[in-house]
Length: 229
Image (cartoon, rainbow, N blue to C red; front, side, top):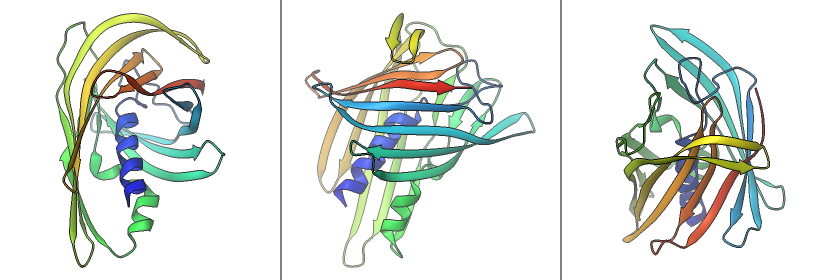
């Protein structure tokens, strides 16, 4: 169960900046586009690779919808979980519906267990500027485990565009906006807060993310290693 919760929290960290364009300034919403991210621990050792691909794009009523496929492999190359979900994009922003972001493998592990997911979508506007404040987001997962019920809550708070800077990864050098946020989680009476920063590049999406302990020390790093459009 702890592993499932950890994977879901990890998924939320990444989903705020994966894809979306045609209607978006920052993300390439194009069928066949692929991005590969490598996740590292605080010592710089690889902990796994995440693959994203767009398998279909449709338009209607001023909204562009993309079908996303995600696969997470651990440091031994074993597939940890997969997911297929939808992202919508308007002329103003990319919006991710958290009801569609529960990994398929999480549903499989839950079996016949009743699960309810509610939340507030995360939004990435097309027009970003330094010192801009972005809206909060949240997700609540309620699970009926028979003898007991469990609720997990995750809040993405204090989102703000800090600055612009050039960042380099194995995929190249990119001119990015840096967005700070605090991710707060609560489950089984345990509350934790993880500050993080993501680097967003126009036409690419997220190219780097750093997650920190509450005291500010680096906990993990994820960066774009390969992409194609």
